[in-house]
Every structure is written in C-alpha cells, then in structure tokens.
Image (cartoon, rainbow, N blue to C red):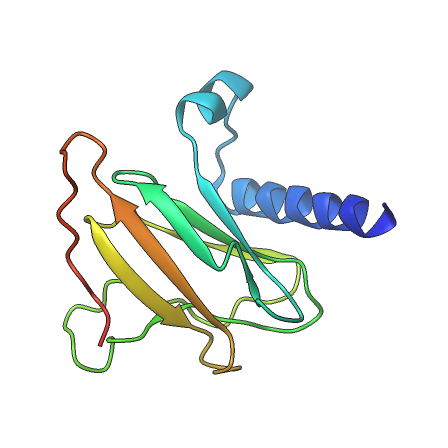
Length: 138
C-alpha cells in the first residue's frame, strides 16, 4: 500500500511541477475535458506500465517517472526518420514527459539510457472501421 501511495504522491508532485513551470493551472473541469494517457516507468520488467498502450488518436501521452533513475522515451526508428515522431530528453526521477498526439499506427519505443526497456504505443482511430494500422517500427 505504501508503494502505491508513494507512486501517487510522486505523480501528483510531477504534475504539479509541470503546472508550475508552465505557469497555468487546470481546473478539474479542464483536466476532465483534456484527458491524457499515462504510462509509468518501472524499475523491473515490463519496465513500462502498460507495456502496450492503446491510445485513441488525438490523445496526448504522458510518461511518469516515479523510479529513482533517469529514463527516456525514444521511438525505435528515430535514427532513420526525420522528423522523429517521439523522443524525450532524460526524464529525472519524480518527473514526466508529455508527448503530443500521434497519427494512427504502431510505435515501438525504448529508453536510450536502459535499452532493455521497451514499450509499444498503438494509436487507433476509433472513427474508422475496420482499423487500418500503419506500422512505424523497423
């Protein structure tokens, strides 16, 4: 129980830090109307929770680092693609990284500091059926 409370406190503090840095505070109504998908860094496998995140198109994604180490998020194909669809700097403990919404497709990503850490984003367009999936991994 203490671990989940610590994680909640760490996430709350990181969100507060982002709000303070940006100079704007969102009301509960604004936060509810602007949802964000959250992915948590983990110190052990699967390293990202959830390891495969299914995200509706148009939704921003936030990676929250409640571990004691720096981590990053980098799309696997960033070396070959310009512009890189997803890349962060090193994210310190008790901080987060907010990525802009991505077009539909599959995005494999990893931590540059710990290459064993791997995750996948599945961005879906819920307005089209059946879903045509574009792969963004190599």
